[in-house]
Amino acid sequence: MKVELVKRPIVLFTLNGGDSQNLANFNQCDCACASTPCPTLTSADLTGPWRVAANAQTFPLPGDWQGMFVPGGAVPLAVLNQPAYQLWTRFQEPQNIESLQLEENETLALNELARVGLLQTASILLTPNSQLLTRTPHLLTPTSPLSSWLHLTDRCNLDCAYCYLPHLREDMTPATARAAIYATFRSAVKHGYQRVKFKYSGGEPLLRFPLILELHQYARSLADQHGLELDEVVLSNGTLLTDEMVSDLHSRGMRLMLSLDGVGEWHDVQRPYVSGRGSFNDAAEAVELALAQGLIPDISITVSGRNAEGLPEIIAWVLERDLPFSINFYRQNDFSIGHEDLKLEEEQIIAGMMAAFKVVENNLPERSLLASLTDRANLALPHARTCSVGDSYLVFDQHGRVSKCQMKMDETVTDISAEDPLSLIREDQRGIQNISVEEKEDCRDCQWKNWCTGGCPLESYRATGRYDRKSPNCAIYKAIFPEVLRLEGLRLLEYFVEADMIGMEA
Image (cartoon, rainbow, N blue to C red; front, side):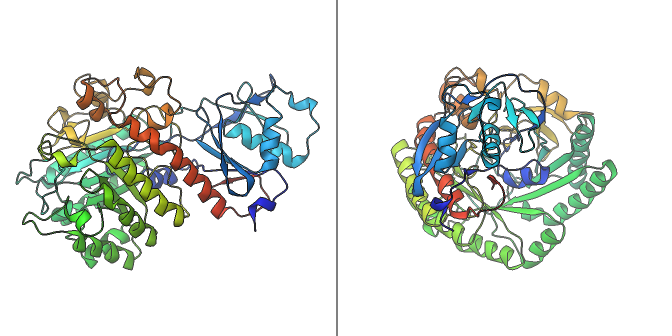
């Protein structure tokens, strides 16, 4: 079907859906992933007229469609055909719905326009059966997991240029690991979480693979005991992965995230073996091993000054295999500070990102990339904090000490013996502070504030000595965000299929 021939009003948008498993899949990352809320509707009475959102911004798309950026909406982007756009423009001046003679498909479209925030009137929505609903404020508390990072070992077989670890020959004992699992469940039950998530990491966690399987069995038993959902992911460089490991992970419903920073030398320049030999071939083989058994790995791509030029090639590589991925900007740390060529030079990074976006445009995937292309920013749905550090995230080091962030494991708050480590993490006022974007003086008036939230707090502190300032990558974000929205608009049009509905939740 040619979308430009549709005569009834059509509103397309990307919405992750409200179920927790979708949220888990949507937010997969190698860090303290952002909690991403979903809109909630409740019954109410009509109390006032509707009007267009004053800050909505438009940009053209093929076939006479309009992309609409909604800074204060429930989603960042809606795509309207001309009938829908013309319907929207009727509300440049406030209009009472009851005074308009609307066809059924126009009423349906108005509901979708209000749902995404393009129409506003006392937060009221209108449903197809004329029941009136109200939308709660767009920054909501989601059904998010309590996540725990388990540092199973400090050992690694690679010597990555940007690694933040000292690589001591120290492992987490099985007793400590089980205690960390148990402590996580204690806090989860106390605070009413419905889902727990464990990230098995290191170092290289596949060096401790038997322990991973043991911990899975223990976590599974506790989850069943307390009636909680369990989500587990192994964060690996992939070089030690075997067919048997893939089978074990897949049969247990565990997920795998692999680090792959480029194709060939673009990966090797950042992630060599300790001997200096490149690791790309082995990491790429791990991807194929996983795919051969139906285990779809998430790919984590770290972009620095060293490999930015090779970004288009790795994006083409992952899109060819239809792999979920995330692009992460290099973050300086105490162990990488001597590598000057890793630093993010704005023009270089923007050029590399734009070149990668051209590849995406020519290979649009079925899945949304709103949470994949923008580093620690997340354009999928609005949020107030960049990540879950200090709120719903626990980091256990190899000794059982608990900190807020894996990049600051030396700043411990408590340990595995605490009855409720999460409460202590939330109450701690030392070290990293993951504050709301409303508390960041550089961000309060920015149109992107609920999608970017000021970036990684550690990066802001490194650059300014304060947590209430914007990211040093702010100019990069602002340069690429509009292009990300344009790509999402093209993707929605690419996969739009006419059905007996007005909105398409992709």
